[in-house]
Length: 193
Image (cartoon, rainbow, N blue to C red; front, top):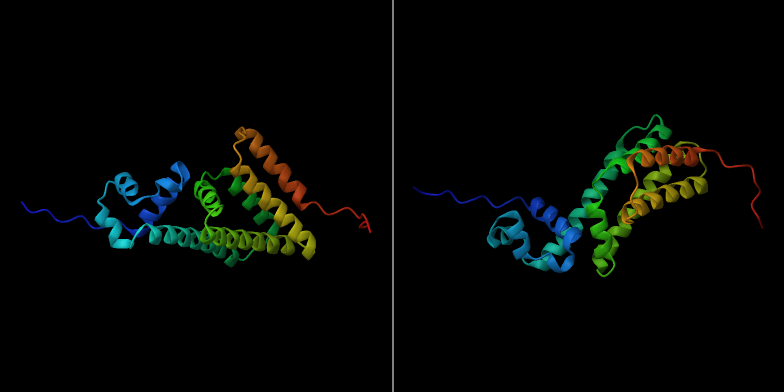
């Protein structure tokens, strides 16, 4: 009986697993042997897609950045008839997603890797730019829109990068309050000189 050789696992699976390991175990464990064992594959499958560990690490960063930027681009392509509803949808999505592991992992890696730091900065800027456009579409002036976009974004990143637990009912209540706070019109208070 002849065996047909296993087809090498798709490149994205290696990159996803590398990010999972980065999140769970840290960068020191993002190694060919560890990934191959977790994927139940030989190292040969790894070398089908990557020259070496450095190629994997750079590809992991590039893959994460492209995944994030394409998601933002898909959101931005939509016709937003109701920007306030879209802002609410963004808040709800971020409150109910469990998919922040890769973001957390990449931010940790960015602390000591310039390529990752550049990718995180690019993604952060694109996300803030998208939110700013939403607030502008909701009739906030440029400065107000930027302030609200940054406030929303920094809150979201802070929520998933801290380890403070939050009961789901309270999370929903806070999301509703956050939305109301972010869409209320500024008071007619003169700027201090």
